Image 1 (cartoon, each protein chain N blue to C red):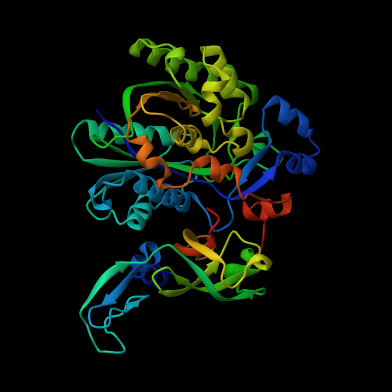
Image 2 (tube, each protein chain N blue to C red; image 1 turned 90 degrees about the horizontal axis):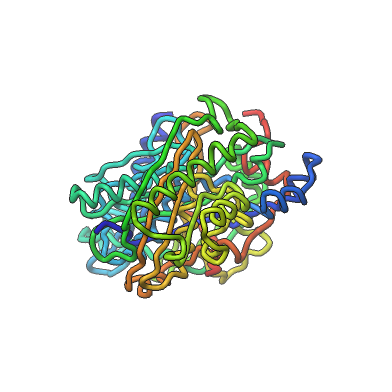
Length: 133
Length: 349
């Protein structure tokens, strides 16, 4: 129980605020953040906040989820490319799975991602929602 | 003078119609539609709660505030009767998500449907005293109504957020007045899933007495009359109560229209009059006076008089308008889905 809450807590900067790192030499942005640029070995980096909109590159529909996500079935997991070129994976919510299409514009919204049973810690983060406004 | 620097709202996309609830419980939908002026209400999906609604509304308030950096916010106050934890603050998660931690004061407020306006009152007081530069007040709820109870036709979800400050204002707060007594019209005891209420006792001696009490007192204090206002926003447990109190106080239907959201939004409890204020600011012109009066059972009302500044025209479209969130791209659910979303079905672990 306590291990989950501590692990969850360590990921707040990326889960809550979409904080990524940009390496000085390559100019590449990594999300989740990394300490070392895997291509150049560079460690000089700055924190950047990712944009909150992008387009779906690919997705899969989960129809038989694990117990933690049972109430959400069926739901889609998608990889989207944000407007700055960064790619990330998240659940797609507020959308009928049959309406999801590759190329669909999405927005990142703050949502409850999972909960540790009825009495454990609640975990928050980002999910994709259709970009309709 | 203290006032609003930025504002924002957030609503779920899901809705349920009054007919759908009435069908399950053998009730007459028309009597709710005519008697309480309720047509449909918002429904939060399982991955949305008071914290997520508060964060999205606050992010929009920050966009409209433009000049405010999250680190300059001295306090985050969240008013709600549906804080996700019994013990663990909503405010710290919201502050963390905004990037406003760690030099900040967080507190969660509770006062039935008035928790949001009391957060606004305290945030205004902090900036007016010079104790901090900016304070964020959020009104958010995913309210509960017992299955089959009259409340189930109205209990809805939504959030409104306001960054208070002393400069770069979009609305000055000219006057406030609060009016409260011990009135047992609605309550929820600890460990109970759903609130209970006094039925017709929630009307005259509760909602109307306190809303009129605060409204008449602030009108007297300010020397103003209903005709001096461009708009008025009242707490809206249904469509009928705010309309009736507005007309009885001397306001017109035109004055309440922009912030009168309950007929299609339902009662967002702590969020009700604050979200109504966001929808009103969305259409207000510089110089407009806005009257606002909340109500929370138990019982009390906070009244505010706002004067809109020239800055409103520069910021209102920096975030999505409340009426757009209310009217467009809604997803209707049936009662079964609604019952699942609202955890009304008992399951094995």
